[in-house]
Image (cartoon, rainbow, N blue to C red; front, side):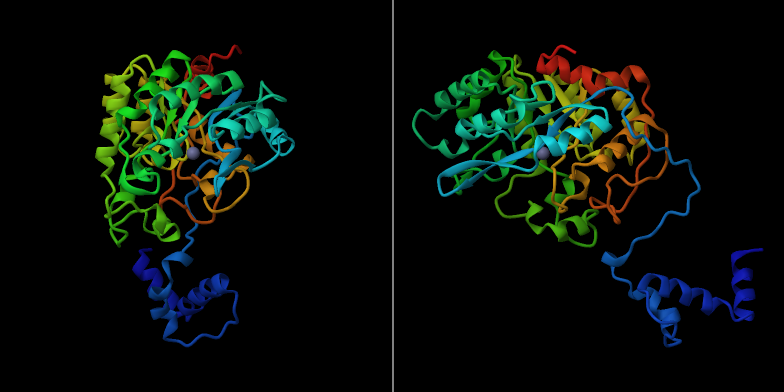
Length: 403
Ligand SMILES: [Zn+2]
């Protein structure tokens, strides 16, 4: 029976309207009676933010409770370095006692806390996470951006890398602060460029100390476009208007990427881990860069939404660069602002499902609505040899850990 005939039949039996009102009531949880015209015209009145369609696909759902191999999560934020009126202090997002049991259940051997800060904060952070659990937590340092316009900054910043290593830091993290927030007078003046020569001694020092640089520059391409009805991240940008880099004096995504590329090219002995795959929406471009720069690696945190909606391209990408892709989630314990980053069992299960299974059309974040865009993802079912590398071997090599 065609759909049209079925509809006519139901209408003839007086069931079509009843069927519809059941749906409306299920959503709104209200009494049965609704004006008859709303049964038809009410369909167009659902606000986008209230729309939570459930997939009707009958497809296999695999629960991957533990990763097949031990995992190093290369991209987490267990702490921030809060800055208030010149007083800088560490802010921990959780305690090791809260995090460790989750890690054990998920076969998560180690977490790299990228935002360890510098100076006193770095020391506090290392003492809190890494010192008591050196086989479970690793801490990276960050640049002392506030001193950018002080005389002697380039050498000072280079020296800080060595000091950080003495304290126990295993790498350097650069947030998108560089390129999008940091200005000549820190918060005012022109934006400081990513390839500003004042940072050259810092990149070199990281290479000399064999500390990998985890670098996040730019953001999804849609963040640089107007937040309008054509923007595929309209809901995400509406929820976080400050994430938009459209207009003002912001560089374009391409300018940011190119400035980062010049840094990678200028410091061939420094190992760069480009976070968030660099530009997960443009794998052909990242492929080109990985072929061009032997000292470049990528990490996949908060981008399985992108990788998983192009599963065939992603699978080829993982096959080709299996030695240079690192597992990461961008996990932050607590908070529910960004569901795709909330540290917890659900988050890891989604990543494992994406990497290990060929499940189809599932949520990339533990949230009632896909938070980064209205789509779902497909698993890429990587073979064990690649899983081992992505889960831990590539990170071990860069961090110079022995398994
Ligand atoms: Zn991050």
